[in-house]
Length: 262
Image 1 (tube, rainbow, N blue to C red):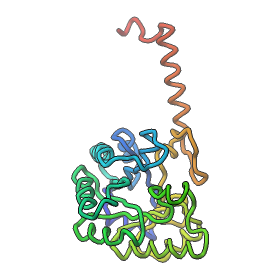
Image 2: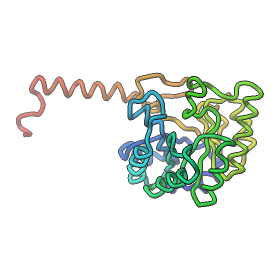
Image 3: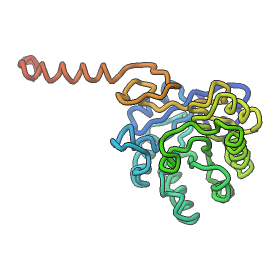
């Protein structure tokens, strides 16, 4: 397997479609890396998948750094991207720079932040300082309160034009790739064709250069709402629940641990 870098990720555009996913700990990051996943996002989705929150907003910078360090220690080949949590870059550019540097110091290869034209100044400053940035436009989960829920973006002509303008703006600011989340398929295709940098879709259609899936959705570990665009490639929640139940039953019945192995 080759080591994925920002350069090789960009070079794949137009040549290879990339299946990327999230991970939040060393165990699953190692498995994804060994399977050939080219890019692993330490997503602020950990707030909902790992920490029990209803949104991504409560995730702290310290939690992101801890998870990023764990993932980076386990990964040999994948590009590791740390997702900047809410409040870590809206707090002023100097603090944002310090938080991004902290992500790289614990092992991230790049950072991801949400927003279009409004964060282009920060993207430009980060890239000029040698911090690779993966941008994120369309439905940005950290703006859930402004949207009034997790809602598809770019559905009207005017809204679609704004998402396209945001994508073009972050490219011009120096982002090496851009996430397109929850936009119509034709808009995902239009933006992918318009940009020189790769698009990473999540609910943005099949034409995007790469795709994200949240690990818990992909593996069937999420027992709550599963977005309509998700495909579950396993149903590990059922297997884990059955294993826990069998263990409890065997301890209760006295069959575990066996007497001849203690």
